[in-house]
Amino acid sequence: MSAVVRPFRPEETEQVVALWRACGLTRPWNDPRRDIERKLAVQPELFLVAEADGAVVGTAMAGYDGHRGWVYYVAVLPELQSRGVGTRLMAEVESRLLAMGCPKVNVQIRGGNEAVAAFYARLGFAPDSATGLGKRLVVDG
Image (cartoon, rainbow, N blue to C red; front, side, top):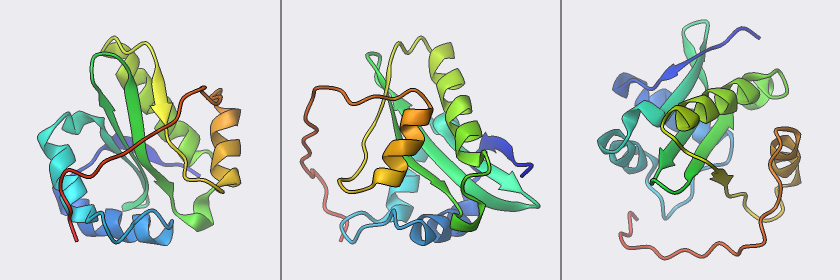
């Protein structure tokens, strides 16, 4: 699969939301369009898409807080998974974070998602001995 990895363009919002839905990444308490708007206000160069044949087929949204990087919304169209698109997206994210001086990158995986855990393991990620906690400050829904 020949996909080009590049920064997201606002006119691709609906394609990206459809991709995230197809990959099961959306949740009722997170408005994906608002998540996109928020990302475009902070480090928009770290919101990447994979494009093939003029269509968005993958995404990765990252951020760097000066201590470590985080990656979210890594998605590839289900019918194109296991063809290297996700690997290329993650390689570009890591390259951009490293260029910013980022020493470590973290991802969070929802419980029970063994296929995604295996993908990240192949990329060199390993479990940290830490527990992720969250608190909503803004409720989208």
